[in-house]
Image (cartoon, rainbow over all chains, first blue to last red):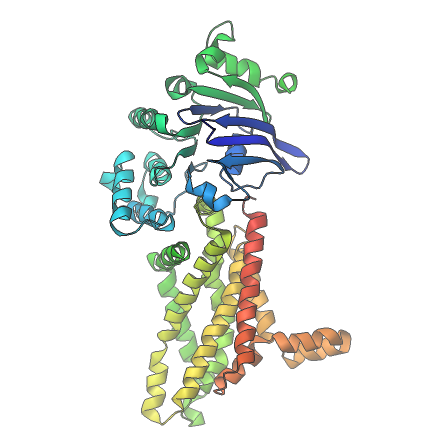
Amino acid sequence: MSALIEIRGLTKRFGAFTAVDHISFSVARGEVLGFLGPNGAGKSTTMKMLAGFMTPTSGSARIAGHDVQGDAVAARRELGFLPEGAPVYPDMTVIGFLRFTARVRGFHGGEAHDRVEQALSLATLEGVRHLPVETLSKGFKRRVGLAQALLHDPPVLVLDEPTDGLDPNQKYEVRTLISRMAPDKAIIISTHILEEVEAMCSRAIIIAAGRVVADGVPDELARRHPSGKLEEMFRAITQKPAEAA
Amino acid sequence: MHAILSIARRELGGYFATPVAFVFIVIFLVLQGTLTFSLGGFFERDQADLLPFFQFLPWVFVLLVPAITMRLWAEERRLGTIELLLTLPLTQAQAVIGKFLAAWAFTVIALALTFPFVITVNLLGHPDNGMIAAGYIGAVLVAGAFLAVGAAVSALTKSQVIAFVIGVALCFLFAASAFPVVTDFLSHNLPVLATIARKVSIVDRFQSFVRGLITLRDVIYFASFILFWLVTNTVILEHRKAD
């Protein structure tokens, strides 16, 4: 089976600074990829390029076979994207916002209604459906962003810190949700919470200073460090960017 | 098309979700009323027409239209929702057109609420309503032209204040470019620009609508002016969306 996400030599420079430096990897259906790295390592930049929002300096990315630059609209149809910080229009109600994304995605009438209801239920937002987003807590806002990404049941999910700001119960729910969807989708999740990676990711990529410094099954990556802990392994390889590069 | 309309609908709803719409409409009607009846000498002229009303309209638009467009892109940028919007399955041109149409629909609503002027002048005399209709069509086109300029400027920055100030300055430039002050200065110094300045003046074009004259040339002028700025808006967005 060909990979649903293919990234080849993706590079982004801001002036003299190279934020992402020739990153290549692919993610197949059924894989949940944990995308790890210290702040400023280039995680969000990579995800922005994958979503077609930021234009890469060089390299390419494909979603379900569609180039995210050359065939952007087709690529985005197959993509559910939760941007960094989960931005949502503050003056809209939860249901109004989800209806808007459903309409933009071309759903009408009964189907749009069903999609919105399903997304509300997946993200457990039924209780706040008529509240304006600006009145919601951080955790609820994040779930609205998540609901928006899941609404069209896309084969590819790119989620930038989906559990940031959630309480332990909500984190657990989101992890369960992601694990449940995993068999049918290719999913990339960026996170700082390493237990989360061990709990739900089938693979982890660690980047530092814009380069991939480790790629493998989380357990196996953890064993690379004498302590056998992913956290120690993460610290060991990301704190020596000069050596890694 | 459904993408453009969804964007336009959301955006238009956004105007009415906050007090912006009501503040704008009230200020617009008060300004137009004051200018028409006092400075314009509506009653003293003893003429059954809306010339004083249309005379001030472009200048009120110069000041108020950038207030409608300033938030269009600057606010998306500030909130980060631009990243969400532009990763939905639509082209940037569709997003630009959708937002422009919403702003245009909003100004048409504001203009429609000036209907008491039309009723007043019809009660007091027998005006040429065809001429008034032509004036309104011209007003809608002038608003469209300024909106297109303002929207493109809004895509440049995340500050609504900057978007507003630059928007007013640019709209003023296009409104006043045929004024003797401007053209005299230009014909002394840069004669080529003087001819261009006279040609691009929005107020000059608007005057023929107000006199009841709708020519294909003027309509094409406004259409290409709006198109030019929508394309500029799309280009700015393409290059600066992720900054």
